[in-house]
Image (cartoon, rainbow, N blue to C red):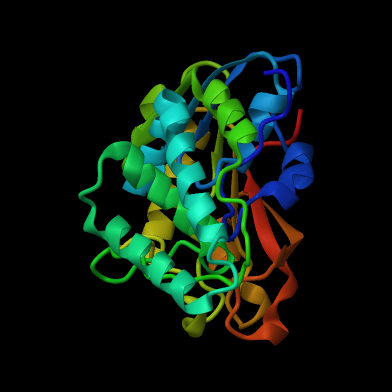
Length: 297
């Protein structure tokens, strides 16, 4: 790749700002050969950082349970020009409504309804995913109990819906990436030799009222967090290094869930700036957890 590739999505909880902290704990040096596996890829901030900074990475495997997200990765890799053509049309139409708030709202909610039918052709569905991500409130991805995307329109006047140069770079970067959709445990069979796992599951809510950020209709609850910890134990038993990020639930309530669950591993508290909170006073810098099973290279 001639220039650095960056995430093509805005993503609540994205890891761009934590990359320096992840780098400090990364188990392989720049010149080493290894396989990188990301079972909860999200916006791919860590994936693209690895592709940009580790020229000898031999294989990358990404996975996510979100079908529309993975469809979008596939579409960017395989049909980026058609995707860009559609996004450019919608960007022009949306920007033309910048001063007409009501028509702009109608346009957004029509696109959201189209997306939720799940009946669009693959390229159209991927374009809708990106359109909604760039125009909704804070790049939040949230679904209702039926799996319908229900985030309201954002306040951006003329958001960049189509970043064609970066989409083409993403397409190039993904050509040799294995893209999976499904449960995180399926990624284990791709591990061999020097293999690094980065795990960024749906965060445990900091309070009962903050669980509005449901990522999928099947909630990633405490039982799922425990199943993920068992997966990390399996990785450790097979001698694969991993880094896991999650919320630091101890800071807003007397909750030692992760401190107890991962007591056998290295737990680091990292400052991160987060804008997603229904209470404005709780926006800003908060602690997040970076948990790992091995020292840095």
